[in-house]
Image 1: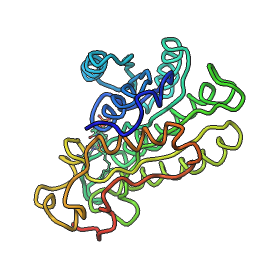
Image 2: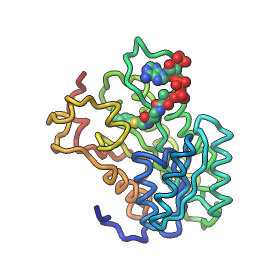
Image 3: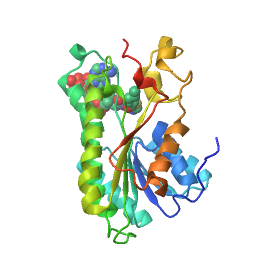
Image 4: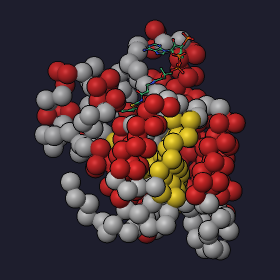
Length: 267
Ligand code: HXC
């Protein structure tokens, strides 16, 4: 689908995206590239990174893949530094890496709970922490009033309660809290805008195939607009928030779910 935004709204910007080589993250990488940004993709799997970079480069997008696990601080530091070494600056950090599986609380080990917290919540904070010196005003390529952007990919699970996702709900609640705290403190101190996006059911994603049982996919309750979202819908929200169109938006998590979370949680 054609973008409603001008093709140069992110011209000259450099974005680093965790989880940027697959699913929603890859579509955000693609749309950022199509709107003028250069993109660095961080992920754990080299083959996935390589094929994503091939696709992006075939579209004329400046892209690199950097192996790393957001749970390891040394990986975060190395990946951020490599992005600067390659592109000379960092303007946008997207935290899209996430772990997920369905499990009843009684069958989830504390280590399983911790694993998802580590990827989603601690990983998000770690990446923000390591990227700060490049995102803040006065960082490479930035003037005294020029701001970096952070986008955290969240969910709506924790607005109510969601079956079999106690770990992810807790992790995404923490992500939203990180979004607000950094928006307040880093907005004030460093001119960095920090926002989130909470996707609903999005076609052709791991989240959809793993989390939404087949029988629920056609119910009105689960799709108030009678359709699922597309990865494109999330990427357009990301372009909006990362561009000057969103220059006064700070500390919010934009829900892009067609109204799905308004329905009651169902087993
Ligand atoms: C119960 C599980 C489990 C499962 C892992 N664990 N999978 N417990 N059911 N299906 C437990 C393990 O038993 C272990 O605890 C602990 O978690 C760590 O597991 P590992 O396999 O050693 O960890 P790791 O290899 O690091 O993998 C972590 C992972 C990850 C979270 C399982 O690989 C993963 O989920 N990958 C998929 C990524 C993905 O689908 N991303 C899209 C997310 S969609 P013990 O106690 O045994 O040591 C999304 C949408 C959000 O985020 C919301 C949408 C509505």
